[in-house]
Length: 181
Ligand SMILES: *[C@@H]1O[C@H](CO)[C@@H](O)[C@H](O)[C@H]1NC(C)=O
Ligand SMILES: *[C@@H]1O[C@H](CO)[C@@H](O)[C@H](O)[C@H]1NC(C)=O
Ligand SMILES: *[C@@H]1O[C@H](CO)[C@@H](O)[C@H](O)[C@H]1NC(C)=O
Ligand SMILES: *[C@@H]1O[C@H](CO)[C@@H](O)[C@H](O)[C@H]1NC(C)=O
Ligand SMILES: [Cu+2]
Image (cartoon, rainbow, N blue to C red):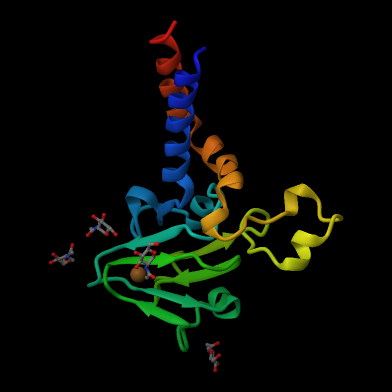
């Protein structure tokens, strides 16, 4: 395969990877943020690999619902008395900037109890900001070496992007190959 074609293929792959880096998740997918139907937000969240930099969107009719970010204790007991933050636009975008659990529920009476609650758990592994000591230490296993700041994160990005976008990448790759041979 010629160098030029390799370059084109690499460029396409990098473009896909870049696009997929900061994922946008609409809570509940097409069901969105609701008490209707049988949407299980725990199950919904369990299939996701939330990362720092991702955006979470809550979409709902603001006449009937809202979004409150709360502590774990309040989340467990559906206690709406002192939320960390309250969102009421009906189309709330929340940027994930920290690792760990982010607890949300609907503050309308009864809705949290009915299951309108979600725990966005941002895992440590590939999401933590680097500390100088971690980078300097030779004992840190490679898999725990965190992604550096977004500006120079390129070398680690392909891991997430390549796996997440394989469905899209493969047809494009095979197209690039087949049109050449
Ligand atoms: C929300 O629901 C009310 C009552 O059913 C309806 O009048 C309104 O158009 C809805 N708003 C949106 C944004 O869907
Ligand atoms: C809800 O939380 C507030 C503040 O943390 C607390 O004072 C109150 O007793 C709680 N209410 C219930 C029903 O647990
Ligand atoms: C919500 O906002 C997103 C952009 O943040 C937009 O793409 C989407 O169409 C909006 N949805 C509604 C129902 O307004
Ligand atoms: C989230 O991040 C996007 C781009 O990274 C930015 O445009 C948007 O204003 C941010 N939203 C909030 C609520 O910080
Ligand atoms: Cu609600």
